[in-house]
Image (cartoon, rainbow, N blue to C red; front, top):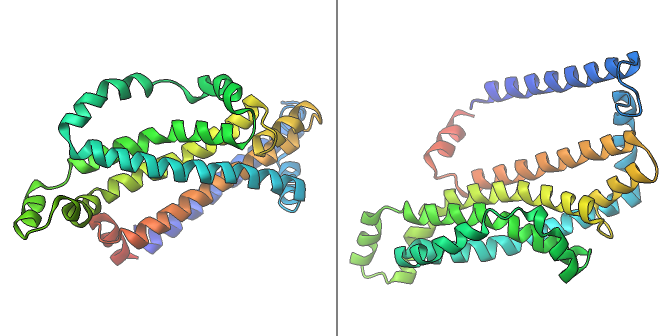
Length: 264
């Protein structure tokens, strides 16, 4: 994407958001929908600014991001390691495939009661749910990436006297890196969703979801709920943007990213 086309896409996106907010403002002000359910957009945006300097709210956001970061790091370490092992051995993958396919469809939300029973409703519960729900995209992308490694490249490395470990780090992992990073980007978004959902449904002791739950149940403040939801969306955009920058920085040798870099 060229710099001009990227700027055009940003401008169009901004126009879309402005149009959406304007329509919501008109609907709320006209009384078509009660302000109890859809407060004016101008009021919600004002609350967004206020929440961004509210210490209690920022503390809740930090609690959510803490669980998100710890869970995601554990997921990456465990899933990439297992994915490399299973992706390097067809027999190991075949032997474990039935177990993986049995566990994978279990919704992470369905495990909330079990996680609360075993771990309580603190950060440990959120981290455990995040690790479970985010492991699958990283695991499968790692396996697919290892299966996609060019066998000629591995044979060439072996012909130069490289052992299995050296070939793994010099050939297999660099080749599978784009797949792995795609899984990490998916997992980062899922982890944020699961963290907030666990806080909402399990009534966690702290976090963004718990703050939204309290604002909705005890304060009856839909403007604060909408404002916190917008901030949660902005956090997701920032996280994805950071991961995109990391991908372009460390995986710039990919043909698609290299071409994009030349065009900008």
